Image 1 (cartoon, rainbow, N blue to C red):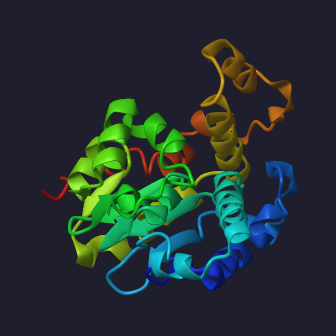
Image 2 (image 1 turned 180 degrees about the vertical axis):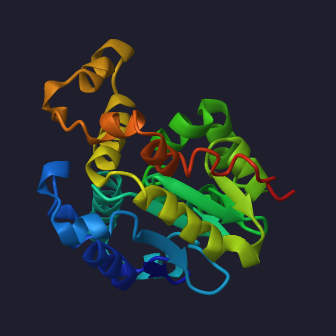
Length: 257
């Protein structure tokens, strides 16, 4: 688990990049080592205390030299792009403040579980700066151009239910349920075949930036392999029941609100 502490500064950025270095060694599902397979869903971003991440350390900007600005932006962009392209499944556990760079971090995670007290927003415009890690382009792909403009041009905060409604979060829970919800999600993912999970994740991520016909190429690609284990399990009632354990996951639960 990676613990974020308040706002981002160079030390926090270096910590975050270091945490994900090992995962970056596996560039394709076939390159996953047994150790990495066992850590398939253990790449979790969580805030320290009651704050997920408030984005950049704005006070630190005052100490920047002119040439520092571009370097900082590039380093932040490389970090979120690194997370976006990870082979393991990533989960953001959001509690408290999730603004600016913090919100942008959640956009590159595969799952986002948030508490009902979390507060979201893109307030950079209030300090005469613009988003730098995907708060315009990536955010508009999730919530649409109109909402991305509203949040970026006004700079107001919004609640977790609004975040969920606009596809920024998968699930909203009470604060005391956050850790348990993440643990249950990890168990549900780890119950699947690791190679199939990472391959499917790759298909979805890459296809999202393609037109429909081009994206269909991934689903029909022969390099997926010919392992018949799952298909044979489908014909076995006992094995099929075991694989169906997560079929109703999150379906019988009411969102807090």
